Image 1 (cartoon, rainbow, N blue to C red):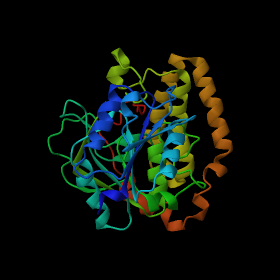
Image 2 (image 1 turned 45 degrees about the horizontal axis):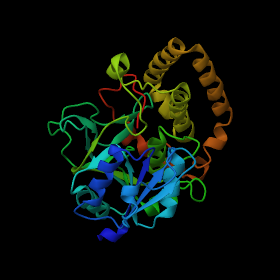
Image 3 (image 1 turned 135 degrees about the horizontal axis):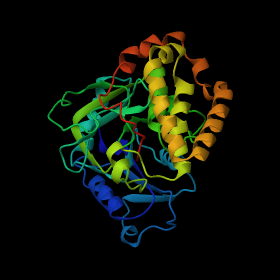
Length: 341
């Protein structure tokens, strides 16, 4: 595998120290990528002065959400493999060199993820992603101390959003419409689980490589603070509009990808989570809870359009074929955890 096959896309809001350390790690990979594209969604409108002489990195200024920026980045690059990297992540020196050979094992491996640690070097941020029984996006090993329990490579459900590597041919095969790989209606939150689930439903696979290590400052790429009770339970202190998007996107994933059998099988966990989530929303802001309920009603009424990909699937890919992967459960799922970038 040659370096010329890898494109790196970094989505950022600001050219700050986080982006600088992220870029520096990419540029110093032992297996250098062919191209690096930074997609800026914030208020910055021109390339930082320190980067203007660097011809290894291209910049795009995007008027849109995180998913829009990712789609623009994928369309604007040409690598056979695409690394979509959060700007609050730092790759170890051999991340690409360790991760990319996994694609050789099976032509149906479309996603590869590594071991994502916090910056303390001992706490796991994620070792592959699964939809939990509550249908939250569950990062395997989340908040566990790394004692080698995830040091074995193997298949997982999805790759999470911090540093996933995709086979471009897989992205093209699950495209929603020309150029829309991630669902742009999501904006941000749960778009990674949705893409992984769509890929699994069309027989693509995800693979975990523990020797490909990255470090992640969870929540920093969306520049969200965590403190007090919110820090303890990983509830993001975000504006109501963003929290509403995080809540509703979980339902978007379920409406598009889940099955009636899957929902019934996990109904006790789903109901328990719904009670906790809606209680929290009512305590935080009754107006927010009402707005979420209205939007959810709209999503349910339009669910047939949300499942446009499902009608084209063979019946065998709609239920039991995913059961072994969907059965995975993270011990921390009882925590009311909203996804954070």
